Length: 475
Ligand code: GLC
Image 1 (spheres, protein in one colour):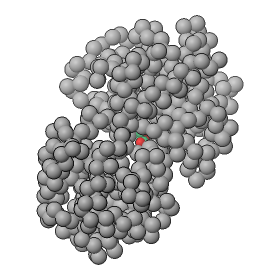
Image 2 (image 1 turned 90 degrees about the vertical axis):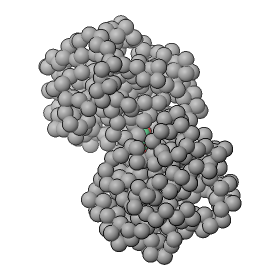
Image 3 (image 1 turned 135 degrees about the vertical axis):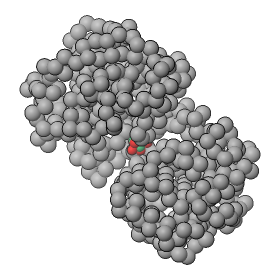
Image 4 (image 1 turned 180 degrees about the vertical axis):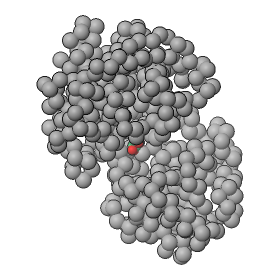
């Protein structure tokens, strides 16, 4: 079976979020299961030089973008035994950021079409093209409207994965001819609410649709979570499935990680306390071994649940013997809140505003508890990384958080879970965790269960293979 995984970012070449982690590890897991999986992504300006130097130039082609003829250089690189194609067009991708430009529709129409155009030139006609999020949602649309009529493309099926339904790629109708190069008869495939909605087009045209956890697959049928697309998904429920993400358990491995203060494992966790002491020092907190240390690594935005944190944190800091290490950036109101808490309680809360993957790992390793009270969370990877480092998550029961973290109420969970999006419930749950922490014997047993939770791709990679097989059989 041959799969081409099309994605707008993949670690280590380019990463701005969880999508890049998935694209940098699922293909490797598929390859280990003997699936011929290759990846295609844009060649951004920011791809690190050491990786660029190792890329091999294959050829260049011309890709149609409506009436335009655009250059597309094809480079090949290897990561974890998997072939990655990086597509070059400096006009579209030699920019400071990956997204949020006025011409994103054109940039990703180019990329989505290039995914199909390169096939004869890389000598790889896949059985399935696995597309991800709005940036590659046009690939299934082009396959349906244009390429499936060509002989070599006839057999190709498409799978579309929704990593986050909040970002859909919505544009005015005027882009249909001029940017997407499609005709009026195709409008209904892309039209939603009077506009062109790329994600909707992907959902319509792909042979199957997956999302990144079973719970999120149910949630997005509901207007509270769907950002407007519930009615489309309800009609297409027969082809929607949720598969929980895994994490790269080699990249995230406390036994071998060179970016943390000391190495440890589930079987010999003693050195975790050295990581804690080092983190306390780095964050300017007193190095007290017995104080429970809560870590936060997150984009500081509304749907991550920070309005709940804002409502209860000061009371907790005031009353409890507790410390927090916070890493993130985002909305001014939350950045400002954590800075203010740091100024008021410098002995209790340390904060780093920004993006810092190495510090993130030191927080996963050094904290006792990991806080992730999201309002919605398609899958979430941070809670799984926390488990891998033996750090006990507190989460809200939504999306992948609900599918990966099980409350310790019965003494057999791997974390703490609250149901409703409510500040009191969050507060109670934090208190419950702090209370249990005082019983170190119980706490260590809970920590062992966290450590031993399976967050690898194993099970989920097999589920993707089943979906690929199902898609290939579709007529
Ligand atoms: C998006 C989602 C996140 C998920 C990630 C990878 O970033 O918001 O929940 O873990 O994609 O699928």
